[in-house]
Image (cartoon, rainbow, N blue to C red; front, top):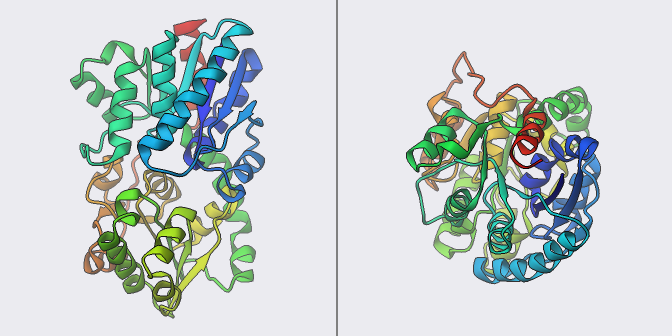
Length: 364
């Protein structure tokens, strides 16, 4: 088989790391990186640390509105995928998750008549205000192979009449987590001590969603949450996403956040350093879908700065709380005792192999 894989941001690099090596052992893969995240801290370091094959084509298509970004991706991807087809038949286009990259890859493949395989299909937050929700729904309804991570995702697709296209492979992020988290725990004590942090003695935060950082009122509320959660006794570490940094400066909130007691702003970190921060944290506050899941897999309390989530299993199990941008609710949720049981809902670490087998059965 010849598979064209399209990725563009941090979570997709993590997911592709579970699949690309296995795929290339038996088939040909053309890997396209759209550059939705293109600076080293959010891109190249992930390829290095996760041993993800270097992209065959790397674009720099980040920035702009969702529509501007997606339209640029469509034009560039069409030329590259047509070019890949000229060198031999493209059996499928493989996309991951719910980003603009995902949607652009699916739209181009559909227009060119090439089958689409969607990893992490079937996830629903049931909030169509979110571009991610719209992206994942459209991609699922264009795809010919829906590779789902959980039973909940399977049920979602059954309700939408897509059961016949669905294969439950488990969660590919679990594969990578089972490799990275043990390394993170081994180095955590020394690595954290070098940064004047103690295991269990700090909070970790991430924030980058357009719905939280692009609107000045919600960005102000986000700063309220972070400053309320941070204390000098239990600092809050925030690897600052470039998008969030730009909005903080634009709306005059940068100094307020930097000057708050207990808030530590740091540059974005690679996957191993982030995992090290995560496994040592007392809790993580985030608006990221991927980080919600990573926290669950690490056994760390998650406080989600949204009012919906595509990973409802983590909430049902009691390991994740949806607080939106309510500072009081966020602070209260941090110290809620964790349940004694953490159900195994995201698979056994063999999802990458199952993805390759499913591709072979569908398209080889």
